Length: 431
Image (cartoon, rainbow, N blue to C red; front, side, top):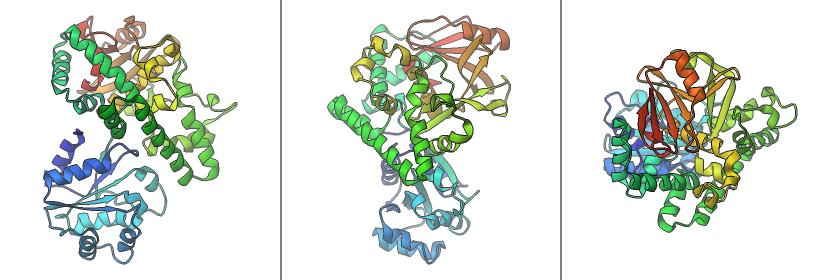
């Protein structure tokens, strides 16, 4: 499976200002596989070390973490001759070895000719521990996410369809009805399978949703294990409570996160650490309310008003135990959850595309699902789970702020009318 993040890694490799690279991302998003494929394709050889599974590798950093001392040991440990500029060195699960993380600072300062990528699933948690000496300013960073819908299509060899989507998006030209139907079916499959590479690979190989769900359940179980392993008993209980409540929050007409849905009298002070843990591990993503439509939006976010989404749409469906056929055929039983499901999907595509997204409300009058900064403009985005094209909230926003254009994402074909760019749900990645 070709991942788009490879292009960013190639840019890092060729940069004259390259520093050791820190690759973050939730468990099972494909970090290790992608790093090894990148190394095989773009380097003479790869020196790979898993610091979580190898106690010997961890002790390598105990005595001295200066590059001239570490490199010979790593060469022996991996069985690879490490050549400057020619070898990719990978420190996998680097959060398991504090000194390995700290050593990146010295590779940056004294041995920048070595190409090193450190990756980890729980780096966000690790670097918040007081004992960690994080190499501030001495590393480059990338974050890896689950596969977006474009990568999902590519995994099935549908690059010609991807090109058609981009042409229609750029020209606001309706997609041919035959292709539109095929892509809508792929989109619904993506809702079930999601973007975790192992789940997508199982589906590509077998077309068996039971095997896909088993894979997803195993990933969800790993998340629960991490909550217990890297939390106190009290915080584990709170974190699992928030995690298990995500689908409840998204089932409400108002998808704004409500602490009272966690427990009677629930308050921010009680659950904010649990929320932060889930966010730092990449399991959830927050979308804050913006109090003003003014650049930069980050300056005007309301820190106490937000929505939360699962980072992978397939895991969201598995977490709620949704039946694949109900999703594939839009069963009426999903009506209460369909809005939150589709909103989560679009939010995930925007996140993977690199947007900091916000939501906007005008009292009890109107609500726009997302607003983003694009090309130095603020663009509102309204999401519809069906072909209902009424846009009262979006029209209200347009009347107030006069954006150059607005985006409507729905179960409709491409088009542009009255300042609104309509795109089908399967084209959200184009934004």
